[in-house]
Each structure stands twice: as structure tokens, then as C-alpha cells.
Image (cartoon, rainbow, N blue to C red; front, side):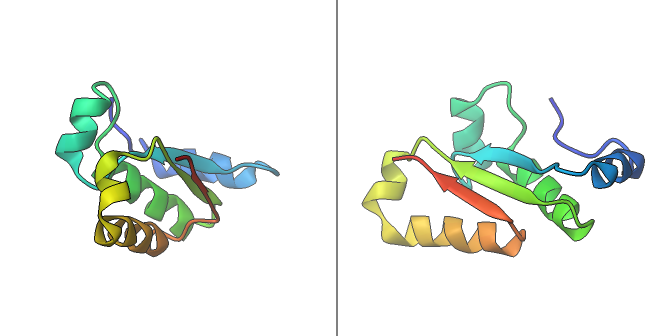
Length: 98
């Protein structure tokens, strides 16, 4: 299942809606881990790219990190990398579940 804007027209429709935001669940920054855990979901890299594109087009975006996987909880650098990466895509909101 691709995670992309099929056309810029799709984003134009979203921009016209009064109360819209687009978000994705993020389970890891590693596409291999996410592919293992979320077999039919788009790769994390595609989700992050879509969030950045939507943000750049002025559409509010959010990410939900959950469930928190053990590698996040056991290594502060991993969670820091995740939060830094999410910050670069320009999120409007962020959610976290432990």
C-alpha cells in the first residue's frame, strides 16, 4: 500500500477543508522493523516523506508513536533520533503511547 500523494490535486482538496489534519502512526525509524511489525503498512520513510510534503503545503500534520517498542525504551539515543526526525517533518501535533 503506497503512502504518497497520488496527485497534488489531492493536497489541494485537503487544503480547502476547514478542519483537516493528516497523521500517521510511527513505530520505528527503521523500514525493516516497521515492515516486520506492520506487514501491510507503508514504509516509515514514505510516511515521513508524506508528512513533510503535506506540512510544506500548509496542511496540519501529526504523528502517533506507539506502541513504544523496547529499543526506544532501552536507548535514549534512539528516542532522541526519533523525536529529532519527527521535528524535521514539521508536525503540528504529536502523540505517544507507552
